[in-house]
Image (cartoon, rainbow, N blue to C red; front, side, top):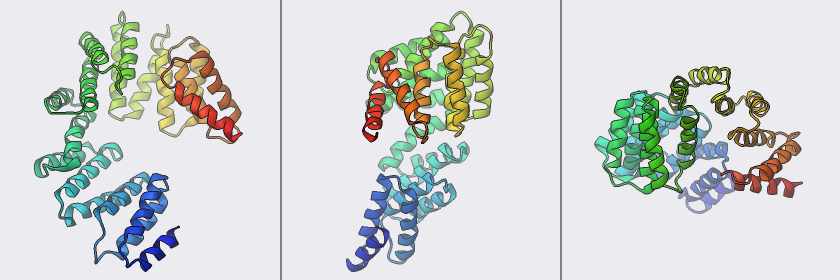
Length: 344
């Protein structure tokens, strides 16, 4: 396909469009190595004649997925420095900030990029995304009062319902981080009323359950709040230490949730064995836990990626369908089970 795209471009007058089509198709199919391969060829081939900004964005996105963050920033820098359209410059600078925020965890640099877009390029999707990303960046730095002000200011803008819900949820979450649990509970309940089908409703529900369960033990609730803040700030070691302490406390209050979160944290660090061990411990110690079905799904999703794990995964999915038909993930489980049976 690579050779065919190059030949097609050569026969078509070297416009670069077949190359860009190849890159977009591979991007849709998540063949990022092939996107990068064509990007390197195309940008080298069209250096003098120029190549569309879209190709730079597709190429840089593939580099990010491949973990080549410095190379991706270099491609975005080329757009900022060389392309005349302000919206392209804003989008490229925002994407640089996003790499620093979500991949390199350099929040000072990310904030500099977002502020530059907001101050210099009052146009395009990059401008809007920078406005939306800035409060998250401040929150990742742990500056809670400033983050609260930033999300409050965000709500004064004309936002879509999804964006308004996001800001409202994070304001309630900041109250939770600041240990003002009564105010946080009111805010989460209001979010459920205002956005009954929203993206954050399930997260709000889980935190309401936590506050209801631990309302008579504020010290324990504060420990969980601190663990959640470390998680929000992408500090996995501190998060794991707090969660393990909660999981090992006598009495078991919030221990089931801590074990489930430890499984998710282990999975995010590519430690599937530890994730399965935490789910097994959750099943053994808290058979009636609200979080057990979520843990079972995590375990099934791990097994389904293993050649010898298809049958155990199918058994777990079937158990979820039979025992927990009202959980929010059940349609996904049904679809996955149908696929596995079709493949068999």
